[in-house]
Image 1 (tube, helix red, strand yellow):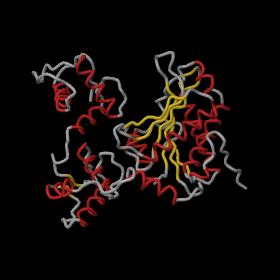
Image 2 (cartoon, rainbow, N blue to C red; image 1 turned 90 degrees about the vertical axis):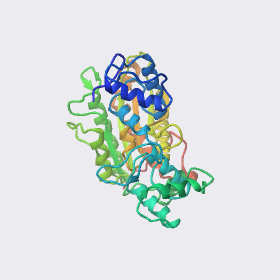
Image 3 (cartoon, rainbow, N blue to C red; image 1 turned 30 degrees about the vertical axis):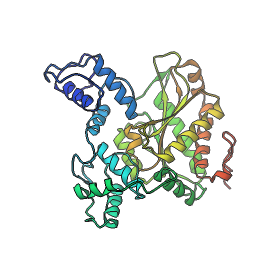
Image 4 (cartoon, one colour; image 1 turned 90 degrees about the horizontal axis):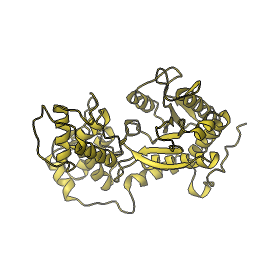
Length: 373
């Protein structure tokens, strides 16, 4: 679809405004859909929506924001929910169903608003336990049963407890771990250009350094594409899912029009209002802190986002922005191969620390993987 922005007009704008009114973010009445105008009030409402939903806040409606608006229309009970492997249902109603199942102690996967096989399995288990027809369909009878029951799991987020237990049980070694590493640019998408070097060159070099170090530690590492490739976000996540990776790491170097933009930030799947990838959040914090401690770059924090590259992966996924090529200090650092080697060491240390028990976890910036014989 064409990106909607300040000054756009037409039925698509009217549709966006209707959803924003339904969500209570925009006042006024609907006018002529053919001449609806994307005004400042609409832009402000879109920005608010993007902030709440963990999207990039630019006040424009592109494909990602449009999909999120469509999903926000649905409340649990508005439609029949069942698993369709060809066209999985997506929406706030699916997210609420997942939250209810998780609160009752059923493993419905991550509360990501996508009705996949894990959610169907959790729903069938709930239906069997409560004497309902275990057809994996959330209809009126199942919905009544869910709403009549209170929260059964206490003492923390059920998904956090389940994921944390899984990490502890899997052991502390990296041998046999599968890691998907995603260079954020490639092929015709060169990203920012710094002198004769492109962002795509730098992130691919960094990915290769990480690949070598993780492989030396015993992990199996897959890059989502070669130097000349540039798959879509859907293709990158599908590749990671097909490899059954334990972790997914997307590498980026940023650029911004502001002369003050600099530093390292990390992102994990989360809505900012409760639902999140708990291990993803832990890994995002670990990798960011390791990079900061070893490079001295500015700390820009870890943040929840609902970007598809974090949401569609079936394993904990993190994006790390390793600095700003548009900032003179960050650019000099990132152009230095020694700094990229340090970042690679930091990433490998973060991966290893993720699998260590709390009592064996070393302070940030001190862990070194032993050399393999």
